[in-house]
Image (cartoon, rainbow, N blue to C red; front, side, top):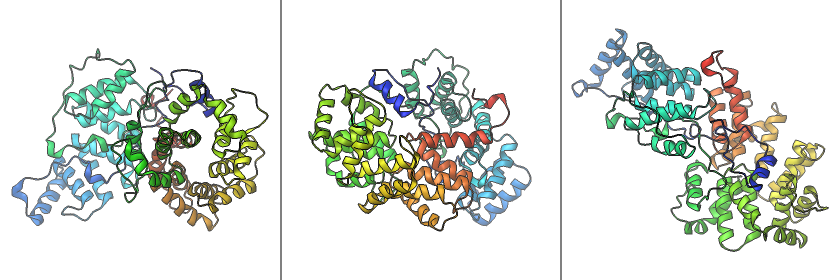
Length: 504
């Protein structure tokens, strides 16, 4: 089964509005982009026999055995250096010893080496070598590695996407006790991949429960977006919000039912102000349930413009309502800024259900005169990119600065991103990076993308591909096409000339 290529937003929404059943490309967002957790939480760690509990003797015994070439000891020494348990915390030394154990065929060391390489710990980022380490462990029966290999085959970054191979590996992982494989297996089966694949040759090794890694925090790459014709419940959006919206614990909150959306509307608005598409969708649901149709339409559109994939379902549903366009047209004519904004965005996407003399810029400008922040941001973005108008950086900054003066964090983020792109040697870069860092914490796709950009190019920070990949991944897994293109470019820059890793 082939995934769809990237589609321009205009074509994407046109397909949706035309009634097509569209499954987002499996490269559009990703399980493997999801998590960035401290390593000691998910490394395989067998521990030590109780009789060697004396720390000094324990260390001496381990080093002696490791130096003698004993792979179990080498693996344990590597983990002790990683966690600082009886050894000074040292990622480079941890990698050194784990590599030694892996080179001797140590199963768990190969798995852990894959974790190192795919995350860039020890400043070595190589997803292709990581794949080979994971594959060795998977082929030799390690369920966690089988799970990772299965997920990697749903992606199209390391190896060519192959749902049948993914299904086979995930079934083996499930047979070996990895319950988290169920979720992805269900998704694959919904795509027509069935259980006819023979998994009888699986040689799964059941790991001790207290030493098993949690598959949920393995950096695994692909998420399957919902069919845009399939109903999406508010609970699904709540789950997305809790998973993706912000890493800032002081404002992250759990919403267990739809009623709590309204109770947290102020906090959601704060995240929308930073450009969170997930928060915008929840606000749209709240306004639609409350009968505030113009605001609901605005927030669905804001979620779409911030690349929240599930927003297309709600826009499609709304636009198919025969009352929608007369309502938006009437509202825009009568000066409702939300209606003008939505009509302008649809016009900019070249979705014309009715001939009108008003173009997107006319409508955005009308709303902007009322200090409508989303319209100010759109005008700034259009002039900055030259999309539909002659590029004019000064006009772009004028619109963004006005929005920022109205306390729009989203506008400040656009300015910061423009600074690091256009003025990499400017002293203003330092402040721009601070803004992008805070933005990423508060759920901004642009913030995460911007940090990926500065690390990839060494702008105001030390050049670091692992850090660039981390931030591009954060943005891409939430739907950012530009972040995914950047991520793919980095993968391709070190892709081995080997048929195993050829994507075409």
